[in-house]
Image 1: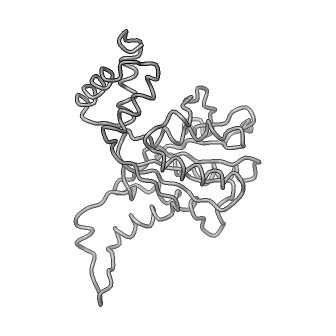
Image 2 (image 1 turned 60 degrees about the vertical axis):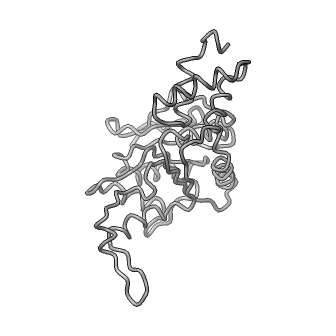
Image 3 (image 1 turned 180 degrees about the vertical axis):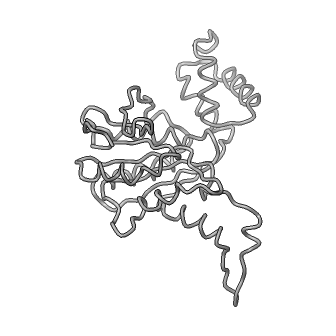
Length: 259
């Protein structure tokens, strides 16, 4: 681990770097704000409530944000840090391939006077990967209870984080009217079950997509032309979501029609 203690008073976020076996301060935090996020009010409210309970030392859950790509899962976690950093929230991003180091990371922060969210972005496991075992021990502990000042917030396109195969369900059976899942299904569900808060994200409807576009172009008078171009852009991408709205903004910001 780090020979020099990490200065959490100066840096609210860090990323684990395996080649240096330690934490590196994130130098350029994404400035996305809480109010920038539209179309996911239900998820924002639930995650904010859980995080506020965590910061207050009240019972709180690890959180899994799962669902369609580009719908604001990662952005919501980033905005969470910007919203609560002044209240003692700190964040450590850990790549899936580095989860084997998670118990050591947690050992180094469990006695610090901050509340830490371990952020695992785009988390999923393929057949034969074993990193989820270290994650399980941090989520619920083993012989030693998990620390009270650490929670795991993960995003994933998969609800159960692990691959699901038709054959797994075929191997399940019913005994005396009671369903007994196959071992593979049990393993898939048991990992996701350790996240007490699970928030689902779905593709944007056209109205929600256009609301996201409007939020990015607040000064535009000709909304009809803006919406026509935004829908044309989304059709070319083949998807309507928050990421598409952001990409549309980057391409058309400064366009004379939309200033």
